Length: 249
Image (cartoon, one colour):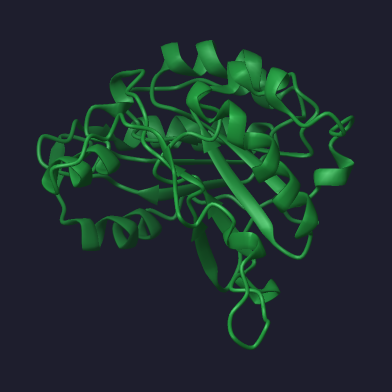
């Protein structure tokens, strides 16, 4: 799921914290900064962005945009969005030239809120759904539900990584295309331990699933040392760890 250019489409805004990984949610922090209520869920002006055209009658989201990060300031499967979701599905189906990436912490709502014509998912092949977890508890709670619906492209993100997470039994299902992880970022960020990252990577290698270490987080422990890293350095340091795994062939 890589592309040279990436875009963002937020059809609705607002969310609710549901687990410890939401503690320092950047969407909440930004809304609080500007005096907004982050839990007020509303349909945005860019709701129909995939269908919008510019003055030259070209789509604002063009095929070269490749990966479209969808619903980054909310959760696509929030109950408040139930009346809007079918229209969002139809727009994504209408634009097979784009690849839509949907992150969710609510995989228990996926199966009952797929479009009626979903069937085996082949008509929506351009949709990738990524389940976000942060601990062993949330992994076991969410992933057992996530592997069930017939979605052609599924991935897992451990972000923020708050402890060791074992997911081999979910990778063995053959349903997961990729795994990534990141430490927590920002003031008060909890520690991410390199040993947790290594263990997760080895599980991916054992199951032949691609793995990517995205960011170290603000407080990164390696051995007996704890490193405080600015947000600008976290991706670079994660890359220098040389633990990414790419399936060949």
